[in-house]
Amino acid sequence: MLRLVGKRLVPQTQVQTLGTPTLRLRRRYHERVVDHYNNPRNVGSFDKEDPTVGTGLVGAPACGDVMKLQIKVDQHSGKIVDACFKTFGCGSAIASSSVATEWVKGKHMEEVLSIKNTEIAKHLSLPPVKLHCSMLAEDAIKAAVKDYESKKAKNGSSDASSPKVAEA
Image (tube, rainbow, N blue to C red):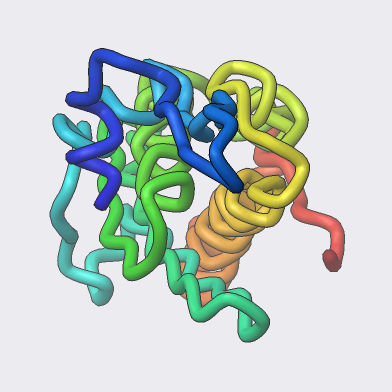
């Protein structure tokens, strides 16, 4: 459905009601949402057992969206060198995941924890009814960082310079 919406050129239709034509505006997704839905970036997955990979799996029971976001971290620098996602959900959820993976690449762990859902929603021009999609992306980033940190602590290679993730 979203692919069809993205290809429509005419944003309104004429409807005949009781003999008088009226114009009805169609709701459209912002072009960035359509772009990230039609051409999602960084789709895929890493080996979750890899100690350099953090996996965040979050879902929204109300709408059925499920998002898995994974980060691959350089253990020496603490920089995220790669990210990928798999999302089951609406176009806004897929677009939010895609944007999130683009934004976390090349950043340090403490930088990605400052990414807020409001920034993602603003970038994609999400309507209020779709804000939960950007919240899922923020939660997935935090969950992936938390997973990486717990693996790092379990392996005994934790250092004092690494950021700790607060319980969400």
